[in-house]
Length: 117
Length: 112
Image (tube, rainbow over all chains, first blue to last red; front, side, top):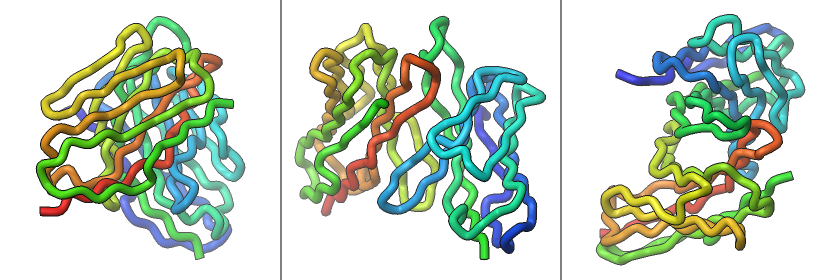
């Protein structure tokens, strides 16, 4: 079954304790991206990746890191989490069209709800 | 910077009604536009992807149109059902890269 898998789905942590949210897709997609969703602010892009070893900042990259060492995986790293990073996080992936910016149909994971105390 | 606006923010209709959700964007140089559905606490499910060269896409009771020149897209839902209750979002990628901008969504409630 084609899917995007995120782990953990729920996490409560404390300020400053490094954590990683994993994302894996089994569709051989080039494009992967992380979003956070907050009430009243909608979905905002954190980082995205056009392919292995190619990553770029989205709208709200501060406090986050990513890496893309393999095509299927795109982990989100919070080196020193703070309470303002409490949010619902989504990973997504798609094929890429020939032209840069031409992302295909986007497939989302189920989300990871993170609480930072 | 691309800005995406969805109107109305919330909509409540009786079952069986046909309805239209609106999405407008400020930069018309887009490759495509995508409509999603999100159920509470869940991920987003892709409904329709319209390429810039297309004017319409249909899937079942859903029909999405795209007018690039005016910066607008509409999602038409025919014969609405309670199971259609969800938040509907539209999203466009920027041509300068692959940053995606989402609208804030329209929360739809279909009453039996």
